[in-house]
Length: 409
Image (cartoon, helix red, strand yellow):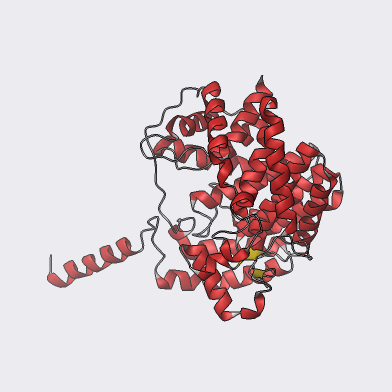
C-alpha cells in the first residue's frame, strides 16, 4: 500500500473514532453546530406550545446529531451483579423505618427553623423530598402515623411560610454564596449577572429559564401528600397556588423542567377534581416533554439522556397516566411513551446493573400500568443491589415499592 493511501485510511479511521458517541463525551463542534438551527426552531415552537412543530424540530435535530442523539452528557455508573430473585418486602419495610428514625433530626425545618435562605445549601427540594416521604409513609404505617403526622405538619407549615405571593416556591441564594456543586455555581452566576432577580435573598422569577419548576413541582406535590394525610385545607390551598403558577409558565427547552409541572398538575387534578389541572398537564406533556423522546425510549438531548433525568421524566409522566381516565384520548400516546421509556431503563439495568435510579419508576409502572416481567425483574435487580458494593440505597424510592406491595396484599 502506498504511503499516501495508508495516511488517508488513518485519517478516515481517526474521524470515525472522533465521531463515535461515547457517554460523558460532547459531540464534535461541527455536529453540534449542525443541530443548532433545528434546536432554535424547537425553542420557538415550545414558546407557542405547538406540539407538531416541536416534534418536527426535534426530528431535524436528531438527524443532525446522528449517533450523538441520546448520548448522555455524564457516563452512567453501574452496580452489578444483576440478581432478579424477589426482594424481601419485610426487610425493606424494616430498613425504611430505621432510615426514617435516623433522618428525622436532619430535616430542613428543624435545621433551619426560621427558613433563612442564606443558610440553605440546596433549594426547597431539600424539604420537599422528606415531607412527601414522611406523609406517604405515615399513610402506609399506621403504627407510626401519629409521630410522623406531627413531623409532616411541622414541615408543611414551614414550607408554606416560604411560598412567594405569586404561588411559586422560590429558590434561595444560599447555594450561590459559597458554591459547592453545579447548582450553586449556576445560582452564583445568576446573582452576578442579574442581581435584580434576587428579592429578599430569594429568586422568585427565573425569567424564561424554567428552572423554578423543579422545586415548585416537588414542593406542591409534597403539600398534596401532606393534605392527603391530614386533610388540612391550607396545605391543598398552597399546592393549588403553586399549580396555578405552574400553569402560567411557558414551556422551555429543558424537558425535565416542564415535566415537574406536569407531575404537580396531575396530582392536583386528582386531589381537587378540577379538570383545568389535568388539561394543562396534558398540554404541557404533549408539547413540552414527549417530543424529546426517541423511539428507543431515551430522550435525545445529552442532558435528559442521563439516567437521573430519564428517571425524573418517567416519574412525572407516571403521575399523569395515574390521573388520566381510562378513556382519555391522550392515554394511548402517553402509555406508549412510558412503556418505551421503562423498557429502555429495564433493559439497561438487566444488562449492565443497578444505576442508582429508576427504582420508583419500575414500582409505579407495575402499580399504575400493569404487571410486566421485565420491569419486575429490573425492580428486583435494583433492590437486590441497593446498598451493596458501593451502590446507593433506595432512599425515598422505597416508598413506591412499599406502596405497590401494600396494594398487592
